[in-house]
Image (cartoon, rainbow, N blue to C red):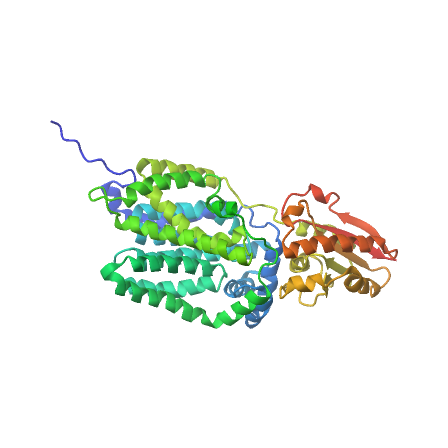
Length: 524
């Protein structure tokens, strides 16, 4: 009887190529980074939206002032401090500031490779690098002047250190826990939702601790080092965090629904993410079961642990947002790293099916890009700027638009919101914002501004374009919607004011969540 040669797994390299793999690693990773850079620079010059204006406004001040001013904003200081340094070297243009996020996103490619290699093996590391290079969620935030690409990069590093410290067997668990601690602390100093990632990691660790048996003491000490070290490093910021939680929050958000929770994988993986998840589920049966004994394999246990980190992170964020709404898709960047690593592990162990899945996902993801128009403030500002003179008054009924308006409009303008005149144009004071907004009226806050305007000067009313009332029902957004109508009516009824321009001509024809309209009026 003829002997049948053992079949080589679909992802295994021939012996000759495997021997030279270490030489190819930098070359292939460099190619993936170059491909990622190409895909993630197609909209690098897109105009800023609200939050990007805030980023530049907060970062464009003395470095030592940033932590203090964030008591009004509600964010941690790391990203803004890095952006301050970056702008001092490269400038504050859209392309320059987007390039910082692009840098973080490109670094996430080798970081994903490293994270998966130490936990799920060589094949998974290449799939993780491919997914990190092409993922459309990352592509969007690689071209945005916000902290989400940095969150993903740090999350990749944290998952790699966490996996080595807690999910795989090894002699250097405590060493990796020492690495995990500062990386987790950096995540916490970048975005508050890193707290949910820390909860995900902590609960998964407690689950492993309960099932550790004779390894319990070792795992306990490792956890104390990792989580205790992160807490110690983060402790100086906790008083500010507590102040922010009490006075700022996210009053523009509503409590997420169940379908928001169930839709998280689709939001993070794109429309074809479901294909990857199905492939992963099929591959997981093979990866998690040891064919000889029927027990869960070591890498299977690691996959369960990383999946638990993802699920608990998202669930903790969802539950917290039921009590204090703060749900936004962009905040889910903290869940991207564990999800991509689990998907990479599944695809890598799915044989030829995994190869097909990875190729299909890569091809479709490569066609996805960031939204080229996130806001029309840049276009509106360019349209009305020629008619404005130094000292003219810009009134925004959505207070958080002031920093981005100030970025694009000419120097020398005066600014006001529903609260009245604004002195610090780089930040929005969210402290007890809803209560303060409820106390505003056109007669009490707008009329005095008009009275003080000299004849011949201009007032520009900037309002959000509200094409669906359903999206403006949170405590903050509902007040903005109502006050916008009141203030627009008040100005139109003032006989001293004559409207000279409305931009755009048909605001309701615009599509997008952060569009504005501007009405220019002259005081007779």
